Amino acid sequence: MAGGGFVDAHGGARAEYYEYRITSYFVFASIVAALGGSLFGYDLGVSGGVTSMDHFLKEFFHEVYKRKQEHLKETDYCKYDNQLLTLFTSSLYFAALLSTFAASHVTRNKGRRASILVGAVSFFIGAILNAFAQNITMLILGRCFLGIGIGFGNQTVPLYLSEMAPAKVRGAVNQLFQLTTTLGIFIANFVNNATEKHSQGWRLSLGLATIPALLMFVGGLFLPETPNSLVEQGRLEEGRKVLERVRGTTKVEAEFQDLIEASEAAKAIKHPFRNLLKRKNRPQLVIGAVGIPAFQQLTGMNSVLFYAPVIFQSLGFGSGASLWSSTITTGALVCGTFISMALVDKLGRRAFFLEAGFEMICCMVAVAVTLALNFGQGVALSKGTGIFLVVAISLFVLAFGRSWGPLGWLVPTEIFPLETRSAGQSMVVCVNMFFTALIAQCFLVSLCYLRYGIFLVFGVFIAIMTLFIYFLLPETKQVPIEEVHLLWQNHWFWKRYCEHEDQPQQVGRKLEHV
Ligand code: BGC
Image 1 (tube, helix red, strand yellow):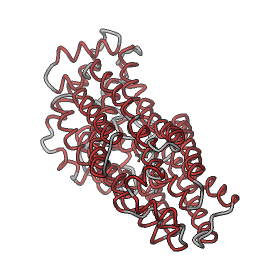
Image 2 (cartoon, helix red, strand yellow):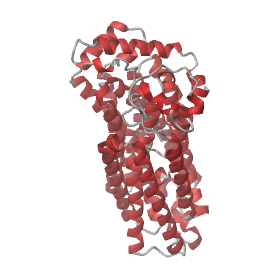
Image 3 (tube, rainbow, N blue to C red):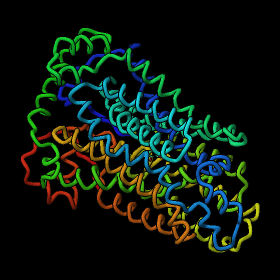
Image 4 (tube, rainbow, N blue to C red):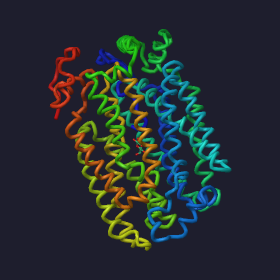
């Protein structure tokens, strides 16, 4: 799930006694959350298209535009290598990364709604600045505002959602955010296709981001604060009332008690980040907080996404054909998310990570070999080779869409125990944004210097992360949050870190592990 969230936002010790109906309150919260995802996705999708549009390049990046027209043999791979152009893309993620710290402060002290509103306003300002940009400074400033919007939105909206969702449907709701992210990307591609021909079309592409921002702001004004947040702020009566309304019943005693206990336990942890560094939390730190979010980005997926039109143009596709090809690949991304949502609870997380990892490695090697043999001689690729590349890239995206995309967010949320959950989640968002920015900033220059080799580099990264999953990640499918520590205690490698810790004794079923 893009942006992260909590599968189980509170303790859940009395989970079997929870009562609920799906209420309009909850449906409303889901719609607002959907807007949060689409806002993130729209932006992810729109920037790739815009940075390959001639009119946009002519206006702000004349150098790149000129180089693009020249088609010199030695510049084939380097047409778009321009640090300022990549800064246009990556500035957003650097801003998002920094703003997650502020977001977590506001979310905790002022409530989830406050953060949602700040995120929407900032995103709106960013979209306006970009749509009316007269120079690069305005463009990049706009991107920073969008980034702050995403930093706040990505941290808060999923949290809001999982706190509002009844425990039984929390996992599905978690993936809803990823789904709307990918739909946002997909829609952005259509918008780019439609605006590409017009000299000021890019302004419309960038400016349309105001629509989800506006809707999220208005939605945010009417949203109730979550019961968890009200309890956290000591407003117990109000918290209980909201819980009753959102669950559609007055029989919320069990859940409300859990919620109070969870909040007290969380408050008792004075230094959650330091706690995360403790030896007994090493698996969560290595896998959840750092490994998975970093690896998700090192798959190279976002390079394909941000720069798909640029890549296809670099490879000799015309500008229109490039945008359509990237629409096909982002369509594959949406399909991948549906597959994951339908099957991940049946087949398990590891199965998806491993089989999709293998497919992604094959695709990267296929792309690299095809380019090594056919590209770089200053001639455009043949039609057949072009189609082969689109198919290989689409299969890669489909594989990411059902594995590292959604699971890169879902799995970390499944493994943090309560006392490190909030700190852990902040780290997940931060590490993810950091690597997103890094890849965005480095990809085009790497494409220029490493040429087809960049795809082999991603292939090697994917091989490493697939081995990482194979050896180090136990299966978390349907394991209750409070039993997750047993996975580490029974794991061939992690048990040395967790064995002698005084974890609560658990009875119950035998857990699957590698
Ligand atoms: C990732 C993003 C990616 C998106 C679309 C998310 O899970 O965090 O970086 O762009 O999926 O695939």
